[in-house]
Length: 395
Picture 1 (cartoon, rainbow, N blue to C red):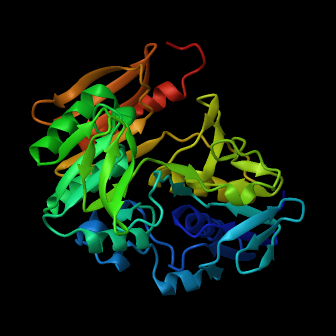
Picture 2 (cartoon, rainbow, N blue to C red; picture 1 turned 90 degrees about the horizontal axis):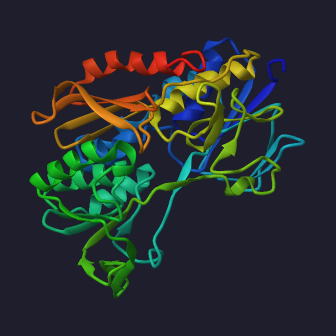
Picture 3 (cartoon, rainbow, N blue to C red; picture 1 turned 30 degrees about the vertical axis):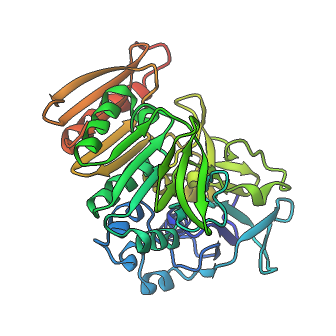
């Protein structure tokens, strides 16, 4: 399609903002509107569970751009107004306040919503951590010595547990898997993370499902495990994953299946694109649909979407990447780490907690993970790139 006369981006976080900036850099001078459900100017999410929650950063430091820079983009921002529906035929977005915003092209960048536990609603002292307001509310309740239970042993839960422990809280990390981030990094690294958390004073109550919460006088008092055991708690953080924010698209006619399903150009329908955590796109090199929940993808995919809107015909074929900081450990992952992968330490020393591990599946390098070896991990990334772009059938 030719460059649209008016573009509307639904979602005012990193993916949406980067799409706008990329369009402007590529010379697009048409009208752009951005709708966001939060009242805040676009901000970065990864620091919320670390620097903002710990108080090392003032909340304003997470803001992605200054008011001057945002003004220079010549964009009509509508903030604090949630999208409630999309008519794909007329390309019109309805909002909670009653607005009907039409455009020649629409970019869906609504991200994900945190999942909740039974009994969570209306109980004081229970938090999720998805947005800036969540982080600030939780931070205000993290008093040294208070008993915090983090439900969810994934990346976010593990980061929150580490941050809270450094603030002097009595921290328990609970969840059904055997070790922190077991699904994301496999047994070798997850067991090392378990050791790290234990050494720093985090209680691990893992390998047991969570049935719900207990409370008294409107305030949480504990986390009930499937076994019937109750973990006492003054504060609870629920970090059991997130679901793509697609409920507003239920009647749109778009294909919704663990996200907005797109082609390899991130196109969900004629003139409609998806970007960031909400987008499930066809990755031509992997030969399957992929949805990536990480900050790097939000930026890289936004570049690709901006190009597609302006007529560039290139598939989006990223090498997935994410990182996490917990205590003094910095982990970086390039590529994918399948559960069945063979893991080999190729640089450094596991005992010293400075190493790079290579993950291979059916003889093909699928990913590399570095623990406190960022330079070496970046260099090893090339092995993932070479394997990803090798001709079909190449060993």
